[in-house]
Length: 264
Image 1 (cartoon, rainbow, N blue to C red):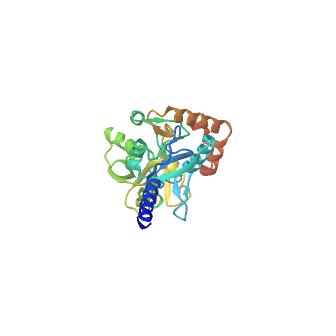
Image 2 (image 1 turned 60 degrees about the horizontal axis):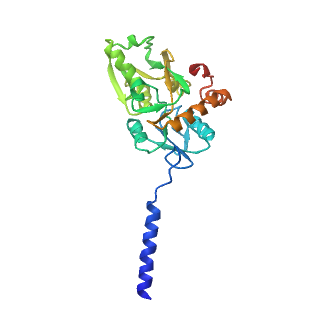
């Protein structure tokens, strides 16, 4: 009897371990059946950030992701990921999509799919209100220390300015929040960021936006290369959100302005 009890215990242990190691069932076009896993860098207000509790995701991309998952009939799950590894996580099936103020670029389209754009964006120059410095074009950043988030379209924008002959001192940060903090502390002369990001700081008298570029950048949902089924479903959902006013409501809620014209 003792031997039988031992064998039974061992078998129970093995079954338990097998249960723990069992992978979630994959969906038809998602990593996990019934789930819509969204990778985002939750530190990019007002697009995505944590509420005061430090746990609850907030912002435009969060609201958009929730609405999109509802259209798809899936349960959304947000996965906080550092920006410098966010697209690698997409390739390794860590999540189904990236919704993180990701600009559609030719370079990115070589390695991933992108949905139709869901909002348009441009770059802006922001300065410390107390400084008295008021650049009205990128050329007036000459000789200044300019802060921005690394590996973003703001970074690409400043690289283009440098190639055009602009001389400045770059101050690159992992998060755009840190760039704005640096400006507030007077440790740089200007911040270059997405214009939509400045919406989060517009009510802070410490900051002044002195130049806004054309809205010639477009945010899209990044999807793993080859997942045409999910791409088609996401595009259909975005079309529906435009038609039924869902996107307009989100624009007004987060930005206080209807940005529908930026993605017509």
